[in-house]
Amino acid sequence: MTVREPSDHIDATSLTTGLFHQTSGYSAWRPHGTRDWLLIYTVGGKGRFGYGSGEILAEPGDWVLLRPGTLHDYGVEASLKNWNLLWAHVLPREHWLPLLGWPVVNPGLMRVTLADKTIAGRAFNRFLEAHQLATGPLRGRELLAMNALEEVLLWCDQSNAQSGPRVDPRIAEAMDYLIQHLHEKPTIPETADKVGLSVSRLAHLFKSETGITPQRFLEARRIDRAAQLLQRTNFSIKQIAQAVGFDSPFYFSLRFKAMMKRSPKSYRQAQRTD
Image 1 (cartoon, rainbow, N blue to C red):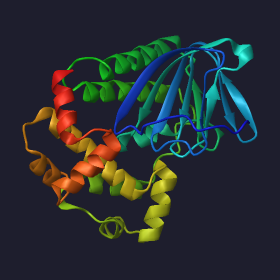
Image 2: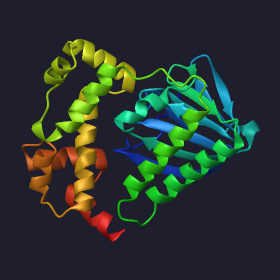
Image 3: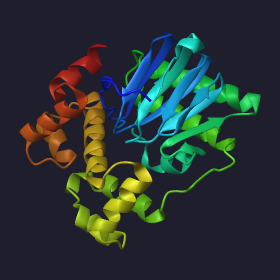
């Protein structure tokens, strides 16, 4: 495993997809992974995924999933010639987490191969559709793409003999509480009390189960909801900031731009002109 300069990456707020046709020399190296999950399906050729004590090869039909914070060391080795991959960086909806308990190759690196050809075809077709929707011109394209990706995970779960481990019910309750109370500015101590955990225990379990901290989850969901409101309503920036729990429109705009790489106003304009 050769140490090199980290590859560029912008964390997804909900979903970012791509379809790559790569040849020898392509690689990605992110020693600390990303804050989102990465799902990769091998369409053709072969890819390699490195980890601390070795590597695996992904062949056509293989699905590989990387948790947040997991080493990204993947690409095409010279001997493999080419790799065609369909990929998605995603922040999962809270009820997806039970669908992400895939067989583990190495901590944070998981793989599933769908033996049933009918299920495999459906999963691939929906993944391709998710990419086409996410990058297409339709209003609400990200929501449509997320729905398609959810179906992908459901089809993969059908062939996942492990089908687990299931998310801790207290963490599922905590996520639901945070989402349902975005506009009320829920605090982590309040959330911990709600689910019967100490703050430190909640923080530990939350990151263990989801790969991110409660604070990161809460902010991502606020920005995600704000992006939906910018796209689907004519509410002012101030109204949207308040609706997702920000007292200051200025601070909201700073955090939105930090995650989305554009201001709320610019994001709204882009969504309506694309």
